[in-house]
Each structure stands twice: as structure tokens, then as C-alpha cells.
Length: 456
Image (cartoon, rainbow, N blue to C red; front, side, top):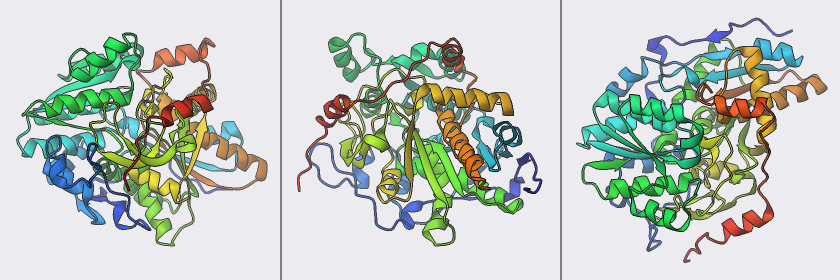
């Protein structure tokens, strides 16, 4: 019988991590460098200055293991961190499993998700370099909400290009961003050359993160007072999110526990890398044998069916070529409700670890994901975001496997955000309107056809 531990484990303010963890210092081999989208030459820090502040660029390329968190950022973090590490006793009982299930609850932040962990430092570094305005994209609206809140904290303006299908599905996310002073448009939009060109050819386009990124990058590149901010994928974004996993390690130490498996949903990779990478370090150091499972939708199977190669991060081919798992930059995803997981590529760092076999990838269907979300909500009293529900699905499957084998496995997953603005998705599930989407071989072939050939 497992020992009784608190339902929630917290940290005191003086126990908060004061540094971000940079996994680039511990990789078995370096990630492949970014390439210029036009010349395919190596990208240097100066190439990124038109859209990013130098403080973030240096973090992007840094090989230092730990990077100090500025005091101004720590001050903002202290208002909502550390987030709780929770033991899911009610879910364990409902499943009848001997497994111990823990979740790190990032929905307790002001924006309702993990995204504020990187929005705050990104706005801070732009602010100290004199930038007045930030442009960005958002899928489900969680990143846009976080950036809207963070820009309000530091007095910057914010323009958000929101993927059209999510703009229509999640109006309250839009209203939240507007409440915090952001300007929101549906992407593709008439505000950029990229958007106008796409709408001319596809007036009914549902949009994609790749298109929205192109619009935001174009916006930043054509305004002297504006930079671009990205909520996932890039190395500096992953870096900022490692505060999640570092907190979790300290919280497990308090209760003398340690996870056998670490699970998270995966779109671009920020929340999963954030919780997993500090634990991955201990495996790379030979101290632990933890398993790592990144979970994505079958409708957007980047890690499970994608190609590991260089590709553009956006549809208009503005961004550097990145070595990653990709479905092709022209990827137009089905309109599933997990809008934050509808991206054609993944973090270069996460992709590297998947390619090395250190992180496993798993794809799950939309209906079984919502089934898990409802099971969790009824047991634990928290309505999860559709994205986070992918992690819950895999955690429940692990727990049910333990029920069959009798193994007392310790499971940790990242509950990356709440689903209070996703009730239309739950209405569709509860009324039986939600359907599953598989990514076919024909769709794969069409997506792969746009991937560029790289000069040797």
C-alpha cells in the first residue's frame, strides 16, 4: 500500500528555481544549426535581430547549462509560482489502479496555462531593448492570452494573429485577450501580404499555425518598433518552460517520490519539454531510468508519422530552416478542437531527443482524448484543456496497464491548462458530434512534397 502524501505539494517563495535549465549543455550530440531560408547558409545571431531582441537570441544559441532568471522576471513569477504538484487520488480510485498518478497543474496561472512562463521573460527582454510592440500567432488562444497579459505587465502593445478555426471556435479566448489590451485578427487576415495572398486563393481557409506565424513575422519585420514572439518550438521558449520540471523535482523530493514515466501533450513542444527536460537530465546523467512520453493527436501526427529533416517553421517560408519532425510547412490541419496541437513541426530539441530514442511519441484520437478528459474532470474536479487531455489519455492508459499487471508505477503528467474556454468542444463531445480524424498516407505524401531539398 502506498504511503499517504498530501493532495497538493507546494514550494515556498525562497525555494523557487532561480535559473532556467538549458538541455543543450547535456545533449549526447548538438542539434543541427538553423539555416537561412533563402541561401541555406548557417544562421548567426545577427540574422535574427530583425524580429528578436539580442537577449533572447543569445539564449537561443547558448550552451550554458543554467541561465539566471532576471530579478524582474522572478518578481512576476512569484505572483503565481510555484504551481502545485497534485496527487490524483480520486482518479486512481476511479480507475482501480495500483499506480500513483501525479500532475503538475499549470492551469493555476493568470492566463490559465503554462504559456505565461515564457511570455513574461520574452516581453521583459524586448522591453529592455526598447521594443514598443509585439506581434504573435496563437492556435487555441492560450499563448495569445499569456502574451496579452505579459505585455500589459510591462506596458507594450500586442497584436495577435489567431488561427481562423480557433477564432471561430473559441470566442471567449479572443475576448480575454482584448480585455488585456491586445488587438486580435483571424488568420489568414487582410492585414498582411501573406494573409491577403492566401485568402485570394483560399477564401474559406481555416488557417494554420504556419500561416499565422508567417503573418506575425511579416508584421514584425515591417515595423521598426515591433518584434515577434513565439509561444513554443524555439530553444529559448523551451528554456523558460523548464521552471515547470525543476519545481516538480523539488516537490517530489519533499515527498520522497520520483516518477517512472513523465507524460505531456505535444504540439510545438513547450509544455512537454518544460516538464520533461529537467528529468531527462537525470536520465542522461545515468541517475534515473525514467521513461518519457510525448502525446499528440492522430490528426496532426508530427512526431509519430512526420519526417525528421530540415523544413520551414511557417507557410510563407520566412523563418529559418530547422531540423525537426515535420509534416511539411504547407500542412493544413483538420479543424480539431485541440487547436494548440495543430502545428506541422516540433521543437528542434525535442525532435532530437525523439530521434535519439530518449523520448517516446504516441498519437491518440480526439474522442478517446475527450473521454479521458471527462473521466479526469469528474474524478478530480478540474476541466482540462483539450490539449492537456492528450496527456491525461496517456496517463490513464499507463495506469490501466498497471491495473492489469499489478505494477506500482509512479506517473507524472503536465496538466498544461484548464478548459474553461473550451466548452464548445465539450458540448460537441457530450452530444456525440465529435469525430475522429486520421492522417492518411495520401495526406503525408502531399505534405512531404513541399519539404525543401537541402544543399550538401
